[in-house]
Image 1 (cartoon, each protein chain N blue to C red):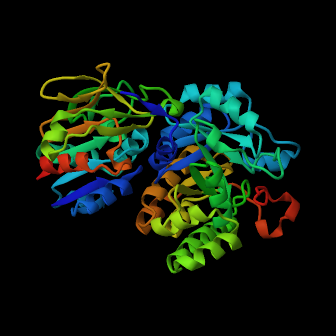
Image 2 (cartoon, each protein chain N blue to C red):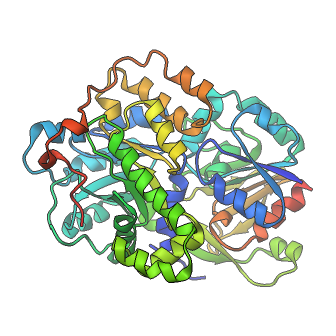
Image 3 (tube, chains in turn red, cyan):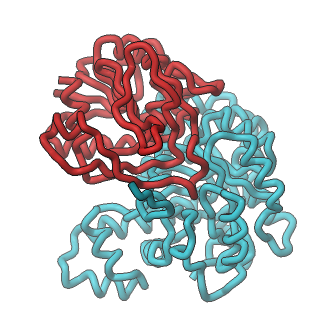
Length: 192
Length: 295
């Protein structure tokens, strides 16, 4: 399996290390031609405005939308914003997932937090029983899911932090900043 | 489930999100919006860019909180602000404003000529400057969650940024070839905490994100620093002291993403207008240099 990581800006090298540790071939994607032959794509954390502007300038918007119709894409944090249909702000979005997100919904950096999440599906697919420790950094919130999108995980107060729509995945948090590879395994199960 | 804030993972993590990006100095909300529009991954809010601090002389302090708050309101990207070396009360004030990162910076006039701020005492993360591996790891030992090589701010001369990046990255390469017994001596000779020397050797890189700063003025300068091996670039006076800031800012953003692609670098370098005038560091008197501030 060969997975690309969008490498316009952000923590793409953390995703690549995670994938390589799982024995998967991983490459950096900066131009449309880099999508050829990939089984899936990860859009990393970073600044969604920076990533969006560069994607527009280098002609990636349409190729990414086409790619997402038939391939797995996972967006973490900024990537989740980029995948959404609605981010309540004027910035380029792929609009592949029927979710509405709110940027910086938890506040500024001093409000960034770590917490444990119970994610049934993740535990089922990976055959594990322990909670998932999630790292949120100036994180977006998934305000609502529509159409075929569904909630994968929410905080105890019901706020949505992970969603899935077929082979598309969005998380508010950063599995690439932890040693827990279960989310990457879960994504590979969608790509494979 | 209990959540934790202000953890080391959180502090280091925000810097990881900034990688492959450009952090730009801005002095008001309008410049902040231009920077965001150009694709900056964060802005540094300060009253005067280093070139003006040099020109004006006098004591350079933390900026007016009102101006920092206006910049925080104007953009959605992270906002950083500078405090003086050792001035932990300026840092407390910046933390209470809610800035996303504090730069304990040699560009401002130091408040303490022996001690830096104990940055572990804060929830907000800090970035600090360094000239070599020892200085970098001392700052990390005090709690800095991000490092930038100092260069010589406000000059538009990249030579010091190159010197400092080569020093830090060269030392990391040197560590790779050392056996365990050699590490304590290396730590002693470089004035660096032993545990962090060990960690750096194991990781094969700095334990936190490492940007370049101080003298970057063109897309080629930015790509040079990236090819040398830093994670991203700060641009201070280089943007808003140039002829066409919006265009130059966007070009530098592209040059950091496509730092290995000379055809893109050629394209973005075209017709950028005047670069900042610049000052040749080799002809600058020692007492005008800022990089020597830091202990």
